[in-house]
Length: 263
Image (cartoon, rainbow, N blue to C red; front, side):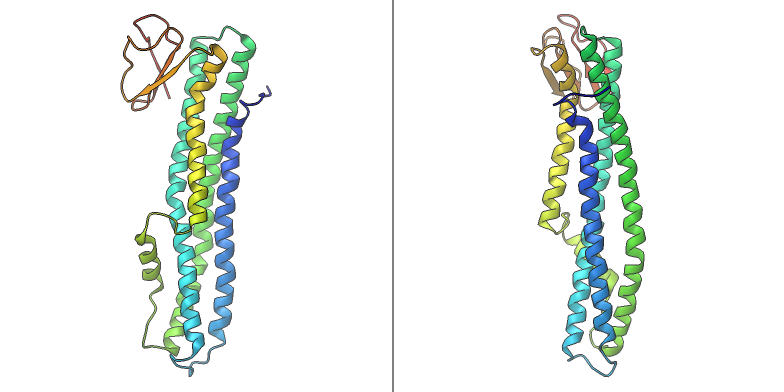
């Protein structure tokens, strides 16, 4: 079943986020590849007898530092990727809970109920597919960086032969850069990841509201980290226990929320 706007936006968000994430990772890897090729050309142009005062020696050091920063950036991207995987799984769980709520308490308008179920089916499918793609990005990163680190090690040894006075520890330099900050070190990438995080929060927030919009425009959605107070809310309202991950509603009786659905 096709989903009409604006509800169709929810299922599309996982694929949109994957496109953005893939672009970030592939751009970083591409930049590393270009800089690495340039680094090899420079180190190969320096004779062993050049000595530490040759300006190309400093150029090599600068290029190694630049590549290290890119490696550190892409390694730090892994942290928000793990968070995004957890968020997608949460989105999938909420969507499944919404479907269970609809089965237990069918909507009065069949067409509306069918569309809500269609939204949830697409959201679950796209969210789980997104998790698989992100896990694949981890493999792409590791496979791509393995030869890079070997090349950097080779270049560093060659540089040490030319200028033994100041050895270069490539692995330690990269580790130092990673440990300096929890951000990626690239403001543009940090901003993009923050926008992705906002989109995910938007999906999570809109899931329960989607049901309410089809059932009763007057219904409200309450949230808390505890069981709902039976005196809170009116008939038809919803309550989300974010701590125990339970959705209550629509409220069936005055003074009683009834049983909730886990998500």
